[in-house]
Amino acid sequence: MIPYGRQTISQDDINAVIEVLKSDYLTQGPAVPEFELAFAKAVTSQYALSVCNATSALHLACIALGVGVDDWVWTSPISFVASANCALYCGAKIDFVDIDPDSFNMCATKLEKKLFYAQLHNLPLPKVVIVVHMAGQPCDMKAISKLAKIYQFCVIEDASHGVGAEYQGVPVGSCAYSDICVFSFHPVKIITTGEGGMLTTNDVNLYNTLSLLRSHGITRSPDQLEASDEGPWYYEQQTLGFNYRMTDIQAALGFSQLSKLQGFVKKRNEIAQSYQSALEHKNIQLPQVSAGNVSSWHLYIVRVEADKHLSIFNGLRDKGILVNLHYIPIYKQPYYQGLGFSKQYCLNAEIYYQQAISLPIYPSLSHRDQMFVVEELARLVGE
Ligand SMILES: *Cc1c(COP(=O)(O)O)cnc(C)c1O
Image (cartoon, rainbow, N blue to C red; front, side, top):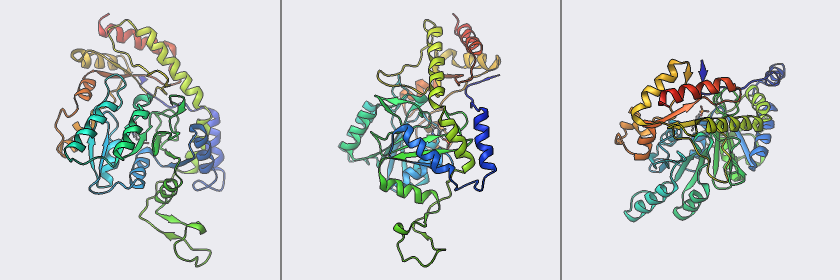
């Protein structure tokens, strides 16, 4: 069996976890801030805050940016459902902006058209736009942040696929063009903590709000108390928060994994390069990385002719190549259909959905296995 993605865990990762297990703190100890500091440094953001997964990170990001009932959040239809669900957790309304067929990311031109149309017709404008760096390929952040200034919305980057990627010379996560950036450390992603997530921002107020929300809305910091300190036991719940914390066990694994990030991304780029040259002249559309960007290659997504899509997909699975499809357009999910979206809401997303196949890509994928994937794919495509 060749999966489409898998974690890379080595002995030093295991040792780091064991060390925490033998220590005084399994959670709320020193490993969490250590991981956060190292992460902020790696992506060149001012602040980084770890959480229990990217879904909770997206939820907190929406709350911190003031998303509530009557607000609109716009995102990409080609993403995991969590990118849209977070708005609904806040009681807000969700809408989708179609993708660019080459990058699979939200199309900045389509976003601009939709914003212009909404303004012209007095329709609601978004409070927050959540862009997704699909497969690890950065979105057109300059264009999106320009629109954010004109139309006064906040930007969340869902960089669940994007740790280690670079946009025009700056690491994804730097928040140079966004308010908050969100990462996932699920085992199929670039680095893992089992379950885990991270938020980065350069705004101290957002950081403080997010920290409060992560832990029940409770603070003990003397400088943040609203009433007077009543004694050494004293703490205040100042807002309705959650328990979305990461454990020290996870953070130690994350810190260890982070030290290998560059190597992982390099290896993924080599595998992508090798697919590129092996599949170049076949009747397959290969993924492209925009000039000036570095992809973290979370996924390697090829597109095949729609009428052969299912047979190629099944053919690969029959050979033990566990290809996948990322993603079913979110608005097609029964739950979203129940919200009233039409079945073919976004045309480019529809075409993409009929063609896309995620091939195996992960650092420990052997050259032999990769060439097996290439051979089988070429055979099924009919060349
Ligand atoms: C994986 C993923 C998430 C959710 O991450 P979890 O850490 O599993 O909560 C959100 N958005 C995208 C684009 C993802 O790929």
